[in-house]
Amino acid sequence: MGGDDFHKGVKPSAQSLDGSSLRILIVHTRWNQEIVDPLVTGAITSLEQQGVKRENIVVRDVPGAYELPGAAQKLIRQSQQQSNLVSNIVDDLLNTPKLNDEKRGPFDAAICVGVLIKGSTMHFEYIAEAVSQGIMRVGLETGVPTVFGVLTCLTDDQAMQRAGIGRGEDKGHNHGLDWGTAAVEMALLKL
Ligand code: DLZ
Image 1 (cartoon, rainbow, N blue to C red):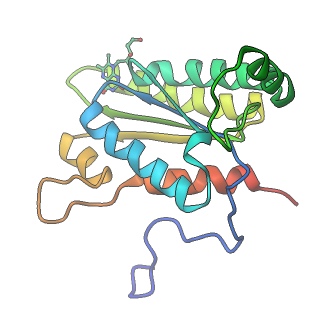
Image 2 (image 1 turned 180 degrees about the vertical axis):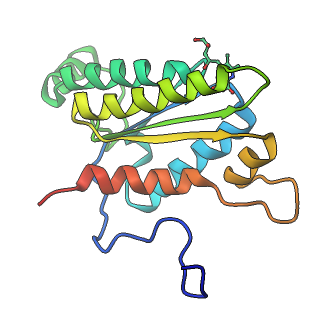
Image 3 (image 1 turned 180 degrees about the horizontal axis):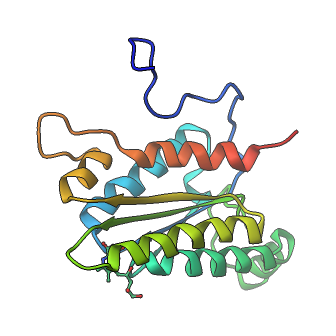
């Protein structure tokens, strides 16, 4: 490990990823929004690179990271109660304008995006623990892969580097790009 051939971070999947049939949820925080925004943009960019149509990416925001698991679970459950067929019939009856390829129905994956930055109290530890456990539970309990897109950083600079907006010459790497790819890979996972 650590030699020239060491690949830091995630290696691309050997599986070919075609996200063109997928519907993806992104829930992000408004806390630390200057850092969250590029992460969300990164996630959307990589979803689109894997073929997900922009109209099938639903983006919602919540106040802070603590709210991410509850919001993701609520929106996923709502989507699981929507049927493509019924929504289409209702849309037709109400004459609701609809984008061409827009899908309805259950989300195939979700991405929770937030940035926790350690302060001088224990708040960070409590929120980070609750949010990471909460997001894991959402995925397992709903059966919808839910990506942990939450940075847990000790400084602003660490967070900015991981959003690709570092202050120095090296802007770092936007982890949102990896989260979009992870969502598509997990949504398409099968035997
Ligand atoms: C309260 C709080 C603090 C101190 N720090 C952050 C943070 O760094 N990132 C974040 O997303 N949210 C933070 N919050 C807000 C909590 O996540 C939550 O929104 C409030 O405690 C209300 O439940």
